[in-house]
Image (tube, rainbow, N blue to C red; front, side):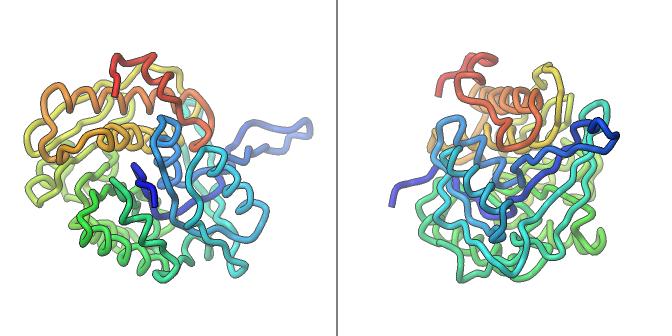
Length: 321
């Protein structure tokens, strides 16, 4: 089996994004493929990395569209299962004038939550440089058990693990449950990405640098706190860097954090150093590359289809990997 730069497990879904009104005044929604783990994979694949997805879709027109989309973006789908017991998960995304999002989900259940531990292709994980998960596969069984089984396997095999909590209040029964489950995955993770809105949920701290320091002290190798228009704070056991965001026109912020994560993980996959040791110019170049990836992503609608190519990113940063 060939080696993959990134293998991700979790949700893949349809983002129906509001795009205006019809001639009769009805709201129009565009069918965009998405889901945070799939978005991260798409970012890596568009940059030229080898990527593979582990997850589940429904046997329906949306599931077929998602499989086709992943394959079109050169993401391996051999571990993408399908089911006739649940419909492909849908998310309806409302955008404000500034491009910020609000969500309404059709996921009761969604096919992504019905992945069983025995359906996981552990061979893919074993041949990954990096294994990536989010927290939304922890909201329901059997996907929760599948996620924990995959993480335990990756940890045992010494695979680098990345984690993005990606908090979506509507998908949890209450905030207390969300906090407990999101925090339960932190001990597995080498690289953790948080938004500035998630730091208190994960660390009880309200300031990004303090939150990052808390996770580093607990054993995380690298902590990324995305700060929207302010950029991202990247902290390792040896250094810290506040990477300024690229000033780009904003059409849709969907997938911006995933684009940053994908860009950063792509850089990590190109070197053998433990992320705990990242410092100096290497840390700065990785973060600036990731910021450029995110800056280009927000200039288009959607997640997977908005990810930039390596050539486009190099147009913004002078970095050759």
